[in-house]
Length: 193
Image (cartoon, rainbow, N blue to C red; front, side, top):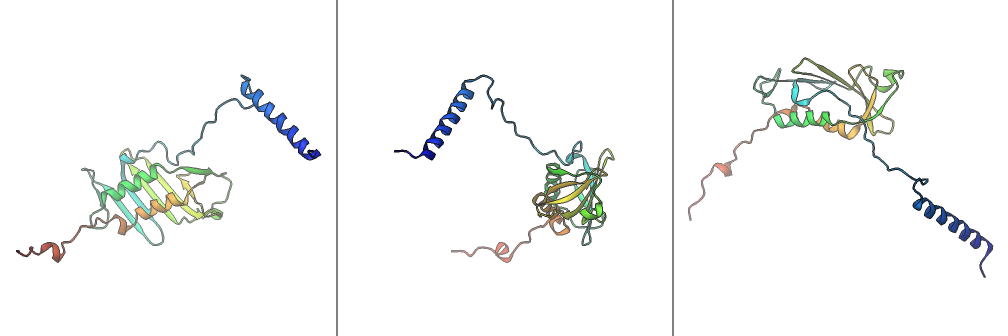
């Protein structure tokens, strides 16, 4: 013999199953429509990394400036060392695909976000003299992102992982082109048999 609670659960299940079957056969069911994924808006729009001609990054520890010459080669402004062109490309492409996790209200005091005195300041210009200024402030309370301002727009939150890659790609050590030096084993002639 079935208990009273089991019978009640069985009746509720049968009713729910009937609703699902009815909805599935109905042309205008309860659950009509298709889900469409949404993506976060891009942080920088209407700016092409291919057109960049000058990049400068400043923080307490570093100040680096590079420019693209007329042949398309990036060089340091105040340094005779060669710039790793691939690292600059990595920096620019990472910057181009940054997604905004959230756009904050413009009434939030910049001091509370660390944007009154940013940790990093990135300035870039392109061949049309269009300028982009990015200020990177504090980590969010969950440490999943940084507070960032693009030009004079409202503060945004950008992924910590993405910005760490961006900043890591643009340090003086990372940007210097490393040329391999021959080792003794490469210079010695093989012994004859």
